[in-house]
Every structure is written in structure tokens, then in C-alpha cells.
Length: 87
Image 1 (cartoon, rainbow, N blue to C red):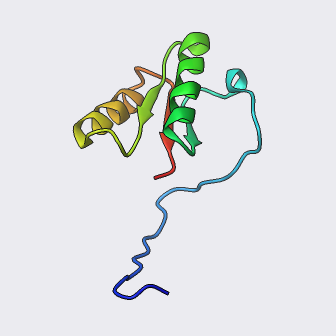
Image 2 (cartoon, helix red, strand yellow):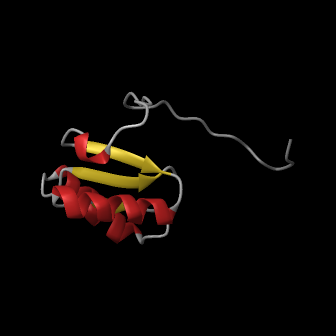
């Protein structure tokens, strides 16, 4: 379709499934939420922060250092939710 473009595929290391629409307040702890815009990520994260106490945010627009720090606070259990873009 496009000249000079090559597609590289990689195997998925974990199962990804659409669980349908859910109320954010009813999501189990240790949940990752995927949004499709930065505005949605920040809105969802703010709602979770107000109701559940904390959420890590991962966006392509963040620096690698900041993204890694956000992932670390989720992995360490400091927050129970991760909100990220699909990129």
C-alpha cells in the first residue's frame, strides 16, 4: 500500500480482551484501562483518583523516564489502576 513501509509484527506476551462497558468504580484493583485520546486518559485518571485513590498515567507524549516511573508506581502497588492510550 505504501512504498518503503515495512510492517513488523511481534507476538503478544499477554492476553488482551475487551470486557465491555464497565463502571469505573466497580473495576477490580490491579486493572489497566485503555483510552483512545490523551483527554480521555486524564479524565478517567482524575475520576479514579477522586473515587479510588490513585491511578498511573501512560501516554506516548510523556518522556520515557516519566512513562517508566508511572509504570513502576503501578507495578509496585502504590496505585491500583493504570490508565493509558492505545499507542
